[in-house]
Length: 445
Image 1 (cartoon, rainbow, N blue to C red):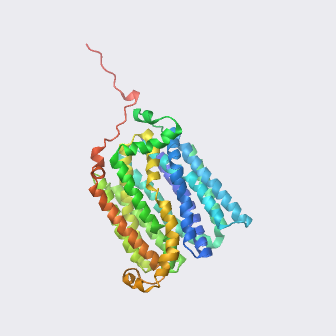
Image 2 (cartoon, helix red, strand yellow):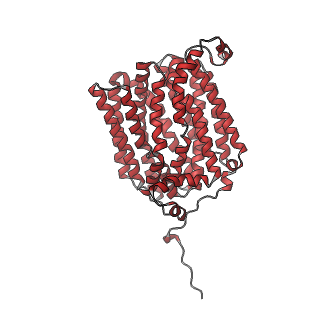
Image 3 (tube, rainbow, N blue to C red):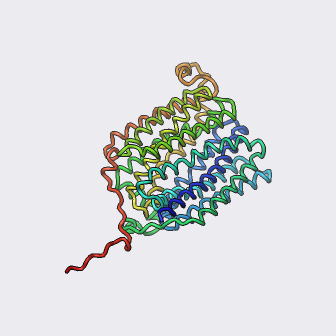
């Protein structure tokens, strides 16, 4: 059974990575097209905004369904819904009726269905992978995005000029179809019901809020989630401007694709390292140290002014990020009952991303109307030695400020006892033995 479960895990990973590559290729093509059409950062920030809003609105509902339903069906519906939205986008391009506001609607629809994927898959890992192998499994799961991020720019660069946006979207649609077919053919064990889950069960509204209740009652996890909210806000402020920043700094789409590839290679290598090493014990020190290191790398990335240095610093932005993500996922899987994980993971994702839409709405106008014009002003001479004064320098300063805030937030977690001691204070979930695993008591002589 363990061998079958491992095979299922790797099968899902492979097909979801394929689907992710298709989505990344179409996303890159659309991003390049959009920036070329408008010349502004704001439309790209709005795409990110409409892609994120459903994570806040719908995620609680998605978490409940991940606990109530067969998680295969939840993931299949997620992929199928995103495929339908992709068909709508394809029809709009083919008809010649496409407008930029159509893209915002399609991205929103894709994001609504995409929300269901993460809590269902993350909760499935607990049922497919034994505890002693979860750090490695979580690392592999985290590496799917970077792997797609390395491959997608190469593919996008090769085929975008040849087949255009329509061809790229068609490929994305095919990868969705493969993912849906495979997920319906595998088997994922259902978790046994626990007493704690029974106490939190009831109406849909009660179960949607039960993840938040769970976190509030465990202050260490709650404050870790609040720290994640702050980190996502400051990093989203600059991260959403990655495309205009790199295109302005380098002036080359080829260099942009190369840097994105190195950026994702950093995450891939980081995932490999953490899967072999496993991180510190307690894991919280891996999280704090890696987030601080990432903040320093973001600062250096904002100061970088050549393609080579941008690529190097981008590698080290993502390398430690994997350490934090894998360690946090392993902590949660150890502390949360499997039949509660869907809604708890959803609540964490919901809270962690709560402030990011605000960052997205601020970032575009801030870059277009404040930071970029500021470069030509006399007072810019104060920061010019650090970030330069050419194209992209204004956004570069935003990256520097985001990096500083990231380091401060990371170190602040050391001074919150409930966070620092979260693994010692919260007991691990210990599953009750199945009926056929209970040894019968011997009758007294």
